[in-house]
Image (cartoon, rainbow, N blue to C red):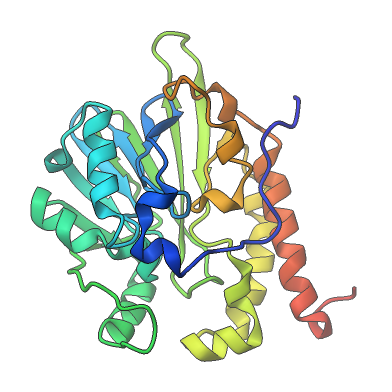
Length: 281
């Protein structure tokens, strides 16, 4: 397969101007799998809308300042945000959760997160020294032995600590009724390795053991997943922007069955280089 899509080796997040001026970085909704769209609305954090046929599921909610873009993108592809039944949070960080409270109030959706990251949500929800969080109420916690089901989707969760202690990854299958093709899809809940440095782990209450587990998980488990369509949690984790097709409903450009494994192994290597004393490099 031609390597038209890849996961970038390092994140370069922009955390200043986009928080106050998200319209400068607006991105239209585009389809990533037959029944899933990225509706995040800006060129940083992704929010994935699942049309289950029996209501909507949303993975991550983005910044507070870009919430209006997310709501507009949902409407633009013919859906109603009031039909969201479940909000699945990949981890506790503000850039992924700050639209959650408003969307839950609008829709009455369940709010899911890992028990591990709920501890950190509670610890940092009133901390104004970092980017302010918008508090929300978690109603459900992931159990990796019990997939989340609604309509056509069965979403499997996997605890994948490192970026945060409770970062959660997602796997699902999606079938195109027109072609009959079923795609294996996955999103890692936290491949931003910058937060796995000793300094950042100390700053946010993480542990070195979690960074080392990230390496082990990526190399021994996740890299072996068979994934046809890998979806990034941030656009800058992949060569996304230049590849968004003119036909926003054409998901075929994102089919890249080599990209997931390459991403997992390259991220694991970056963390190994942070802890050379633990690896024979």
